Image (cartoon, rainbow, N blue to C red; front, side):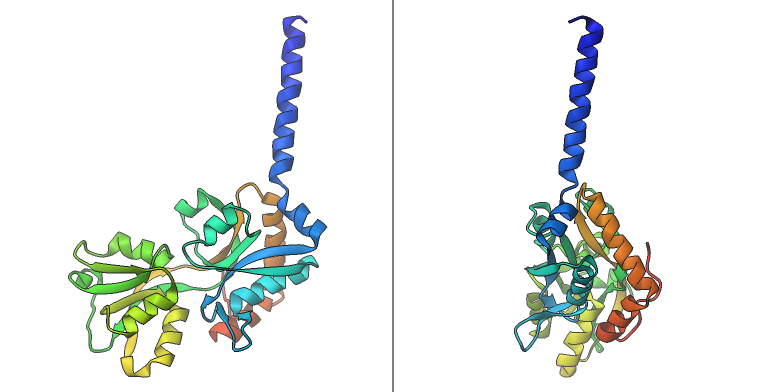
Amino acid sequence: MNPVQRRAVLFTVLAAALAAGHAQAQTALDAVMKDKLIKIAVPTDFPPYGFVGIDLKPQGLDVDTANLIASKLGVKVELVPVTSANRIPYLQTKKADLVISTLGKNPDREKVIDFTVAYSPFFQAVYGPKSAALADFNALGGKSIAVTRGAIEDQELTKIAPASTDIKRFEDNNATVSAFVSGQTQFIATGVSVADNMIKRNPALGAEYKLLLKDSPNFIGVAKGEDALRTKVNEIILAAKKAGELDTLAKKWLGRPAGTLPE
């Protein structure tokens, strides 16, 4: 075999390998449509986005969004409960095809997973007693604050809080709220939905909004390389947005329409 022939064979082998790798990477949507089942990770400790109802079944805005996507795909949905700490690993290890779990988009996360367009509004803030003044983040110095480990509010708080801030991290939102409600910390950093629920359940606390951490719409997480699935979900979300379905879900669970969301 002469050099030209060897190069031709090598090129053919490499092209075939690349094509096989590409086909292998684009398997999630095919598998979902073949099995007529999609596994979607959702929160069960994060009302009103995801929580367990009195019937012991998951419900909330993220759960309704998961059901919406499955319905539009024409497949059944298997809801996979996750926490803030394990939702991305579940996606990476194929325990879930999608993650719909109040997931904010940031550069670090974009290195390991892909995101669809935004599907719902969200923001994170610092809350505390009305009696405790908090003019700015510098005022957190020397004070204690509860936050859920690995959540976006943990990341944002870590960036801007003074070094002397006593940041107490907990494994899930229930433990974070319990720490603040029981007086283990002076403040809490959490999402608006969790805070609203906490305030309604514990009116004697006199807790209120203090400082905005981040305005962060929610996105759906997709495994790296699964462009076909991501494109299909984008089509579904954009169509639901145009039809007013996203506004309907937001009004149902958040008391406000979804409004303008980034694409």
